Image (cartoon, rainbow, N blue to C red; front, side, top):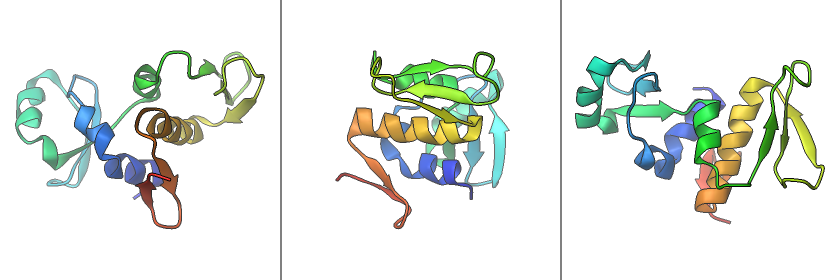
Length: 128
């Protein structure tokens, strides 16, 4: 299991807020398969929601952030890396690949919304 998958699966608050919609990416713990949800699948997924792990897209993660928490510039502006200012205006920009950015955004969201941080050694979310 890759790091983003593991982190998403263990952040219960994130999974608890998920409302299945067309185009969401999920992992089925029953079929051991990753799928992109189609309209016709939504009722069944809602019925058996505990059997799925939601993987939010970068856009979904950004949308869940508290207002004014971050500013992101896409790679079209800064080459191949996404740049992020988490302090909004303090000029503390950091650069990430798309994969790294999803992990960093998930960590930022967990901290901003639920006061949790990822413990690499334990492989779980903790409240410091």
